[in-house]
Image (cartoon, rainbow, N blue to C red; front, side, top):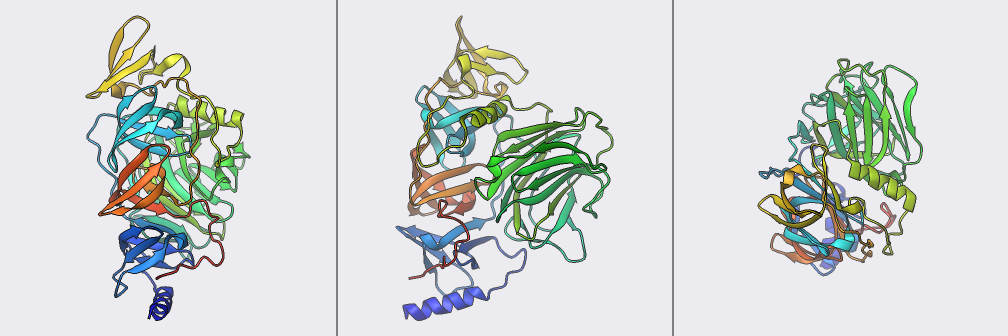
Length: 459
């Protein structure tokens, strides 16, 4: 009976055809089958998936599961500031900063409550005001215009996926100074063009705006109405370390500066000395330049103040000096924002000292002369005491969770209780993580993707 059930399940799931907007949540298996539904339980090495397409829940070996996705609304923040904690393994977690000490960083999160991160695993802590997004999505194809007679992009589960070369565009009302961030995933080398400040949604070759071309690990930058490149970054190693990345462009039609960030790190800054501030439109384009599929999700458009993040820039230079990391062994390094205990304020001033306490949004700082109290939202970065940084080891059974706010977190999946994932990590110990907060959870993250013969098994 078990064998018959498995054969029926595989046969049934292989012939399922989904409408573009039909999936609120889905699981992708090692043989690339996709099944709608939701996680019912996780126990040991097994994941139980319930689906309206199945008579009974199906049980799969987690080693044969690629990921599950679900639609998650971006949380609305009532607090005046938000902290971003960057860890040495590349994780980035957002929340409300609760405490800083020589041994730990404490963060109040919306998905796991209060989390305590080991100081030796924390690269930096930055503070920002809550973002009012001009656009966040995608949530469907409505409002987007595709080029060509045959659409190259499909929508499924809060994600655009290309099936052929071609573009998709939308007027999102880009202001003269803006941030455009998105998650990209691809097979093989990345082939993608991002056009911003265009005024034509119907063409992949608009005469206005700027074009950023990603060609494997090289990035090119030019005006849409010119052939000369204003910038070329030939060796972006972050684009070849894995087949996914968080890409962000900070652009200003006032100063002519365009800043490229990959996974939160400044990669390059280009300048157009002849920029014309009133020549731009509000349209953004995503254009696949390869037959290999590209996935675009987590699009966020917001205003930009025109200032580069000095912490991210310093970290990018530090990473270049240290060279590539070996993910399997901890590395020793230096923190970025701890030089002489100097902290930058949002108005450009700096203050040297040590954080004593954080309470009700106020930070008490001990300086060489006295203790001062500063509102948390006035800080750009929190100075951490110098430490020899370590990086957590990879462990079989680790998963990577992606949150709606762009955060990502690697942890060992110990099981599931109710609506919570039970996780553990050298970075933060044990945690109870709300499964409904994750837009995506990846399994087998250290195994090469797309491996032949990875067929999901059911018991």
